[in-house]
Image (cartoon, rainbow, N blue to C red):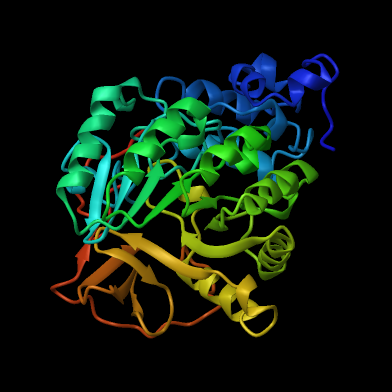
Length: 402
């Protein structure tokens, strides 16, 4: 079992997911119960105040190394000094989700599926979060009438067969509210599959109660994708949570984000993926980290991910190998030689599954790439993150090249 600080609640309270949510770490004083914050971390907490919230469940905080500020769990959730450094792009909404949202918080970027961001609340606020623009922001919380507007949109579009409930994190909803929402969706004849995107099995596994599993089982087929990034997160509590989901008939997949200093080597990624399959969790996607402001220190060259995939494929069980992808406004692109055309200086050029060309800003920063991509000319028709797009930055932004 995870070590529990004696002054931080009784055993019964510790195992209560609501208690975990109410007692999240969001001050230096609370953080000191778990780690010795460095001067750099203290500065970063102050520097990012009012820009992007930080909060950590007591359970997840207990997984952090108390001394090592480079601990892979600590790096994901404690503000870092590098977050306030200039970033090559650092946009607010790199996938143009706002432009694909016909109603509030409902993203319709694929013909037959939507991502419905039903809340802006999370159990923790990951420092690399794709939706920094909205998580923790009251303006993006969903009132009942706004949820109904999203449901009306689903009813009016018979081409939608797959609905992803995401956020924020939909499992911060009460069982009652989640049961209502799933029930409403299940009454829409053309919706075949409902998926949940949740990190609570990782950061607050106490949320996966028998009662919750009973709610999910009432609305099958329900799938759940969660978000383990490092083997340290594969605790007995997380294993039990995933077992309860699997036993309730909920297939569980995992979406890992490739993060520098956290999981950007083949040994760590193999241990993570092989550990997941022992928990009946299928490694689904390995994501290239997005160009969100303040995350340059966590992003890796695309060649790093490609090298890791070469070390996994053929060296472990096939179902333990995720698909390495980059999410773009034109959909997810598998980062394989079938789609990646080559490198044009600080950009990697690829063909999307929709037949368009995308150029991803992805500098090597002088490092020798572990996989060598052919040099290509930047195609005139290639789309890329617009240099004039709104930025998510703490300080002065570097001018993008080109």
